[in-house]
Structures are given as structure tokens and as C-alpha cells.
Length: 252
Image: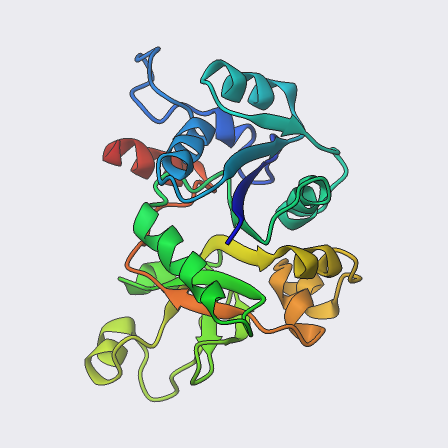
């Protein structure tokens, strides 16, 4: 398969402004890499992709990637989502599969990306994404950690910032886990698309559920598209807040 990876890299963030250019090493270490450099290098070093592209709306990010030896392109500053941004690039590229790795996932690994790509050996899979089992109740309660409910074939039934499914008989994660293992699944912000499907998705109007949850994938579900969820052991840190940034710096 002809597969490329595109990393959408928007500078302005609602929760942590300029997060992609934040250093992940110690603050006094001038040689430490930024969040976006970690993402790019991790994806590039997997050797899974014909090409890895950072799609950004900011010259500072473009220049950072260029200086580190990577490839970046400028895209419109008016895109409402990362999917819209990668679609702008995808229109200009001949490929079969496009993998969208969020610019704030610095610890994404090869094993998870291989699993995602392998989903497309099934010709019926048009969209795939990653999920991982939650480790604690605190994370489940966090609205920044999106939950997924699956059908018997591991296709997504729904994504939510709320704690789903709701267990009426048990009030905490530990009691649920002791009775029903692997029930809560965290969404990992990595997607794979067949190119023709991606270009159709971005033409869909925003949906009601998407507006409520602020989750663009609900637009696809509401319009009848199926999303295959590939379970991975990867449960890395997505950099959304200062707290996330501090946790990531402890890992580096």
C-alpha cells in the first residue's frame, strides 16, 4: 500500500497556546526538542511511510521542522479541524492511505502505527483509529480523555467526553474493573483514511452531536461512515494542558 503520514500542526490552541513549540526537555536545555519535533521524528523513524509531512498554519512551526531536517507545508489558517488541514495536503498527493498523527502526540510508537495500518488489509475498512484501555478512574472522568463504545466487531458506536458506558450498579473504576475487564476505552488521536473517503468526509456539514461534544468524528458516524477501532497498548500523553506538559517532561 502507498501510505503517507500527515501531522496537522496548528499553532493556536484553545487550552495551551503554542504547545507544539514547547520544549520537552528541561527548560534550561537549549538542545532539547519541541513537542512537534518529537512527533515528527517518532513517525519518521518508524520507516512505515513513503512520506511524512507536517501541515501547519504557522511559519514558526514550518521553520522549526525545516531546521531539524523535516518536511513541512503551509496550509490555510481557516481550517476548523486537523482533518480539514490534512485534506488540503492530500488533494495534492497521489496515495492510497493517509495516516493522521496529531501534532500533540509526542510518544506515538511504531507498534501502534503498524496495527493501525494493518486494519486496511480489510477492504471494507475506510476509516480506522486507535484505542487503549484506561488505567484509572481519574482519567476516565477527565473530559479531555475521550471515551469510545464499540460494537462486537470493534467498530465505534459512539465517542464521548462523558464517562460511557455508565455502570448503574458500580460507582467507581476499581469495582467495575474487578467484574468486567477492559470496558472503558480511551480514544488515541491517530486516524487512518483511504484517501477518497477522507476527501468526502471534509465536505460533510458539521453535525449536531459534533457541536455538542466538539468531536469531529461524530459527524462521520452521523452520516453513516464506520470507524474501525484498533486496540493498542500505547497509552501516551496527549499534550492538551500545562499538566500534560509537565507529565511529558518527566518521561523524556
